[in-house]
Length: 176
Image 1 (cartoon, one colour):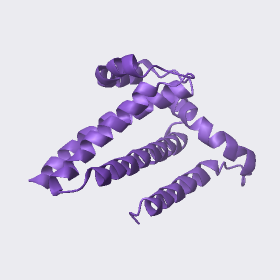
Image 2 (cartoon, helix red, strand yellow; image 1 turned 120 degrees about the vertical axis):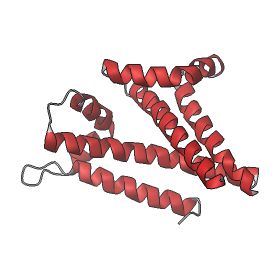
Image 3 (cartoon, one colour; image 1 turned 135 degrees about the horizontal axis):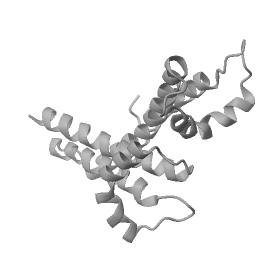
């Protein structure tokens, strides 16, 4: 029964946390989302972000309420492990690890979506939005990674670096 509860809580938390992280990232890099993405993102997350903004205002152009909201969601979802007898400290460390992995997996997903758009339909309505979300990650790599036969391999390099970051993160937290 606990496994099913954890599955349901994790699925809901991952969706909400992902939306909150997307909201933070869009505002951090000042990308205006298409209206459908904006409506989905803000409708799903306003109930948490607006009250948090009264406590945690945006500073330096960053929407800290969205980022802290995402961490609170992962913390709440991770609190299910307390039912198994885990300590509060262990739960907090696991939540921090999961939060950082959500960020890494979010960037990996955006890069994969961009790759799919580039192969299938580079002129899709969401393609420029996804490219803009990935640009801060890919721009520094494009300065270093040369084109090979006219192909931009910076996306592949970014994916490998994010996977390395995931492995290192697991080692730091003792999960690998």
